Length: 400
Image (cartoon, rainbow, N blue to C red; front, side, top):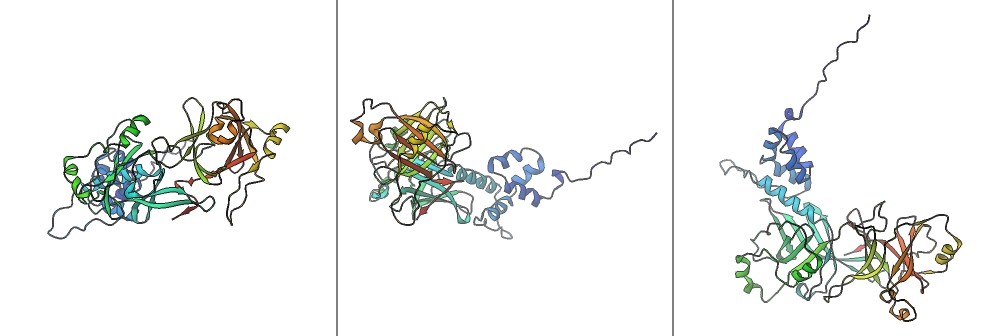
């Protein structure tokens, strides 16, 4: 009777057997929260996470300025440098994405207000924030420099608006405040964690100094009186890009009926409804977030479409992009159709007087095969076609 040979024990290397430089490379590839969690897994990873060599490994991977070298006979390496660097990287990564400015009566050094800001990675491990505005060139998005954040040799985060030091502070997880720093040597305040307050509270905060300002900052207010910068508040645009389950979600851009480029923010609520708001500038307390359409029925009409629906679409004109070098939007292939409602006086105040019910106007959303969509309302023969503002966190069609 044949017997199977005994199983041969697999020969391999366990994590604890790896040299320290290999463990450092593993930690350097992890996101800061994951690296902190990995450091709790075993003693070897805990020792590597507190090693003074970890800041150098992270700097090499991210293109950051290398930490100061340890000179013979000099002070021992700072064991807290790795913790500071991980904390700074975590803060920068939390800022990545699109943010919407809250209404404010002031502006930065007299510049025109912009309702949107984008935080993106820049060369050498810095984070560059740009203000976004519709340009006069078709569907292009104008980007102007706003704030630059980087990590200094000690592992701390530094932020500047041009050559002016500023602070970028978190208030909760989805609300930040950008304000002038008391001096170039002051660090950013620690994040004020907790749930984000309602939007009414945001507007209340927008006209006050940022919470968390210390005595040192207040004592130096007089030094900046000649060049005052009011605190500017931003809230994160969550889910800024569409998904398969939520194809209309995100920040979009399109040419409106007034032949100007506008930004549109479409959100899905907790009860299944969809709302679209136009994101405008923030010159007044009541501007910046105008409702365009909404619906509580998110069930799309699927192909084949009825002749009535086809005529409803083909009988309309697409609002064209002005300027050379921009293609039209006709002949798009419609994959699905969604019924919507809106207050028509918001969309076209000149036609609203001719409607019997100004508070409930029917319209359609036409979802195209390429993932973009257009919308229009009864009483008008036009379609506003929308395109993506960003893809994978990068702004499309940007002009610096």
